[in-house]
Length: 72
Image (cartoon, rainbow, N blue to C red):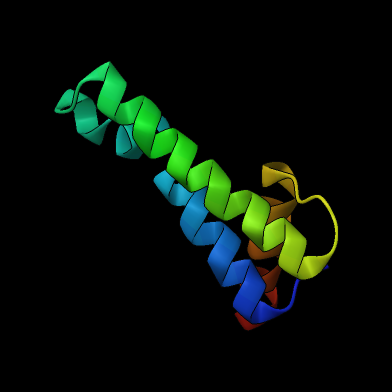
């Protein structure tokens, strides 16, 4: 389970890694999108090192959705 700061960190990355955001709705070249992907995945791995374990995108979304239910 991630603390709120790390959950926010990984949620930002999840959103940036979505296809429409990664490719800027088709407005950037494939090479630019690939560079962006590599950069974002470096950030992801840095976050994993900070929390001390691998983090799966599905787990981030599940924890975020669960936290939204509690907030209501």
